[in-house]
Image (cartoon, rainbow, N blue to C red):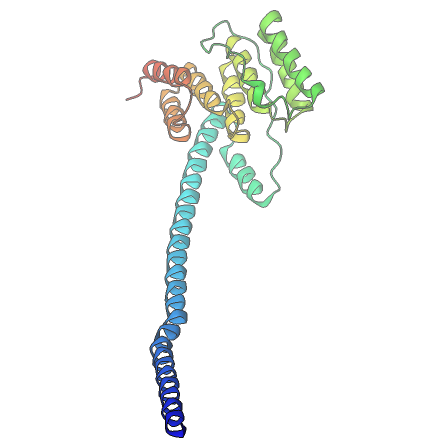
Length: 268
């Protein structure tokens, strides 16, 4: 019985030994895999950091290119402003000083258009109603009412009344979301009176000070038309080229008018 018991105890010990050996072998085999997990995570993190650095470099390059393109566009617009100032008999260096002041935050407000004796001809048609639906929630009611009253004056009482009303609106609400359109309609009123120099100035202010409004492309178009009427075809063609560069997604009707204006100005 003892032998039998000894045999059974030896078998149990051998079984336990085999079990412990298998467990030790499993632990030994699992140790490299466990050690590989943090290394793999580290490699993935390094790969992710490399991808982020590459994307950051691409974003920075695009931002640099956008800033360079914006500087070039501003320079072209400033050149057009110089030409308009020359037409008015002014000194373009004053505009250069004003532009430098704007960068320092000390620029004076744009000069108000000066009245002049009317002449009988006009080529620039009055623009149609603007899409105010996107602005109705942001424009205070008195401000919107003043704008609509000025537009009614232009449509029903004629360009002189409309001109005075829109000039008053811009004086009262120079920062209005509707200021770009008001500047456009003011320029159109001047053009209908044949006062193309004042029209050019108004359109120029519209695109210079309100270049991100829905009427900005039409302000450049109006500037080109006024310059053509003043016999400055080269400058008109520059304005049209600037319109195409700044507003490639302009409305088809605006693009069609630009094509017609380019033909009238003799642009190549």
